[in-house]
Image (cartoon, rainbow, N blue to C red; front, side, top):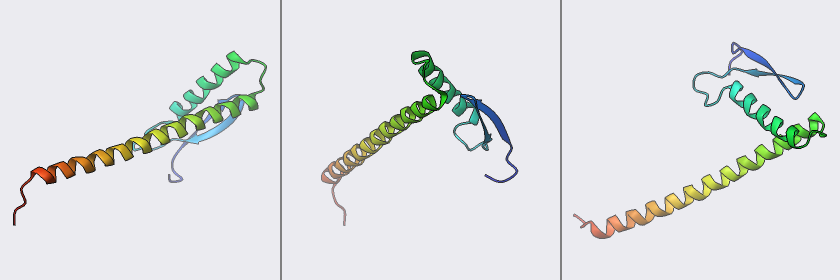
Length: 101
């Protein structure tokens, strides 16, 4: 991002943070990210109101890291399966296609 990109200040768990607005090619806006973090923080605070905000932030980070790792693993597994199936399909096509010389 260039220096002309504006930033917006958000407050999450009492912490102030400035996030830059992305351009139109970004998949997610800062608003969406902050909303997700806020929602997850609120869920944790409702279940465990005795936790300090730093502990809540850490639990949110751990939860999101776990979700990301699960998605990464699923992606790699599905990609490997897709490559394997594509290879088998290509082998079948080559078996039934007469070779021309």
